[in-house]
Length: 90
Image (cartoon, rainbow, N blue to C red; front, side, top):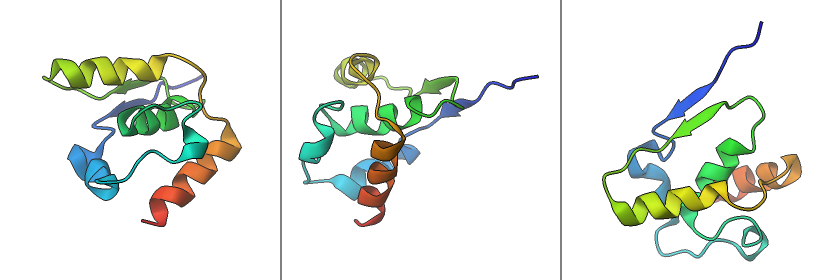
C-alpha cells in the first residue's frame, strides 16, 4: 500500500525566503528554476515521495510565480543534493 505525502507550508512560513534575501538563484539552478519560490517548490516536486505541494498564498503575483514551478523539468537527485548543500551553506 502506498501513502500520499502532502507538503503544506513549503516555504517554512517565509524562513526560506529570509535565508536567501538579497541573493540571486544560483546560475546552475536557472535551467529549472527562475525564482526562489520555484527553486523551493521544485525541490519538493522533484522528490518522488511527494504527492502534492500546497504553498498557499493570497497574492496573485506569488500565485503566478508558484505556478511557474509546474513548467519545465524538475531537478534530478544530484541537483536536489546540491540544492540542500547550497541552502545549508547560507
